[in-house]
Length: 505
Ligand code: NAD
Image (tube, rainbow, N blue to C red; front, side, top):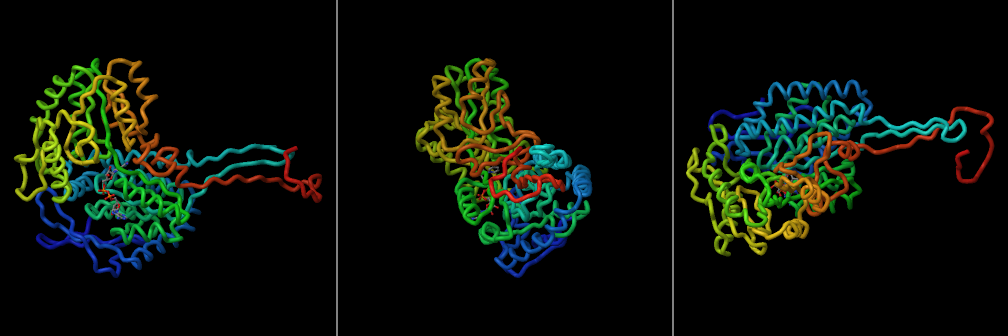
């Protein structure tokens, strides 16, 4: 399905506009690599301002007809997209693995979580129902409706090239908007595959478009008057910039940023369950998940036993090419791999204990792959960069504290508030934690508490700029505007001039 060159030939990954490939005029490109081999497998187009405007124009031209397409017809197309996706998700998973590096089973999990939002969007008719009040004033009725906002831009990160865009576009399209997806330059092919699937599902030209590019494309989306809303997901500095720039240009913006997720393990927890969870949440997808656990806060005298259980499990993980029988794949680029490794070096130099060291990992894959094994670091203190910074790699730091209060204070005083978890068998402690913790998504004996599609996904503090979280009813609100209609049908008894403020009678 994807446009590929022959063996040895670099593919060009272009834009998608009006239901066809659009090459644009810019000659700028960026290399796309297979992280498991280190080989350059394609060149992604980097849009110029003119290319970006052409795609925005196509989306704007398609909007009037799409917003007036009946809900029955819109949902039939979304349902068809869901069926095609469900049948062919294996193809998409393979594309994700080839450009991101995560193992195929994990890529399939990502697609399935995105598909949940497509399924949620199939019920858009129910979600768009307004309220109606008869006889609010004598012979006057009032009703509310929600209408699409227009052209929306979705700017997504490298770590979930299918799921993160699917947090937004099914709901946006179902609600009657037209969409421009600007994927990460690191793994841009999944977006094109999904665009082709939309066309096959019968989506009219111009409703779903893909704009490949970097800051130039993003800036045009943020400033172009035709774009009415922006959903961004990425690192905190860029999220802050996107929010400030987009809102200064009159747009609705939800900008989801970075994370540094803590898991607290209380002394009464089931330590085997907690150790399993720490390995899964710390090292799954090589730690390149915004909901990964990167700081384990061990409370009281359980720390030695817990660290030993985690270390034993970590040593059994198979690191290798995601298309083989591996538990964990490579990191996304060599630059990122080296950056993550430099945090391990810094932690060691600052006096932390490297319990399991991924730096010299012997991976089942090509020598030039971007390998870094799972790394467990104990006795981390809060002034070390391995603790303070978002690392976004397979590095789990252990911070030892004496009390629940100390653990809670660590989380609440940090700059991020994306996800967190507590492991305990004490219902009262868990209930207190869910009430007191300043984080948007909380797990109780669940390490990666990603909400289901009918709830909304989003963090607090520097993990989200804006008021609205992704998907669920908040997503429907973000992609629609409310309107209230007050109506009266011809009734001669209510005629006449009255300059006073309307009052209900
Ligand atoms: P990133 O911020 O580098 O890139 C995100 C998007 O912004 C990409 O499409 C990129 O092309 C664009 N971009 C990059 N630099 C830009 C600039 N200077 N101006 C305008 N646009 C720019 O993020 P990434 O490395 O692709 O993804 C990892 C980050 O995303 C991590 O920080 C992770 O926590 C975060 N993330 C957050 C969530 C969440 O739900 N909060 C989910 C997934 C990822």
